[in-house]
Image (cartoon, rainbow, N blue to C red; front, top):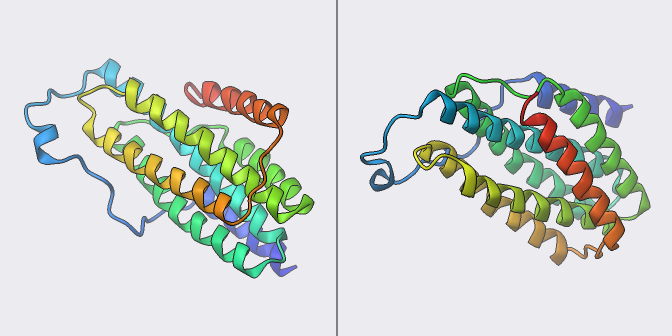
Length: 209
């Protein structure tokens, strides 16, 4: 019962609470912002779409880690997952703050994305800890690639969003490496392809909704 209440609380906080980052929001160096023009309405809309996608990714990360931490019997792994979730909370706060600054909103389908990621985390965790870690590593690899694409496509003048995305990319790469050091298996190619397909549906939808 305690675990059920804790996971329900985590879901409600992820979806509806105001998040506070433990770390300061990343900012671009002053030299990078000097002389930059203000964002046009079209650029703001584009940046908001990318940050909405990134916010969805952080909602899913919270769901994945919460589910995996709830089912593992390995205390060390549970601590690792909970630590990663706390770091992802920074990302959740940063992306939401940036969305607010851009005059936009999170995805209206966040409860759906959360439920899907939570189910994936439960299934992976129930199979084995090494499979659970494999899903962490692959998820973080895919997120890192998405973030790299965002850095290429975000408006050059949007130094605020670019600074956030760059730090997120570093953190996601670190999480993937930590999962592999902890014993993550290599997922079969069809599973990785299925995850990429699901991520494509999610990111394409979240870009607009």
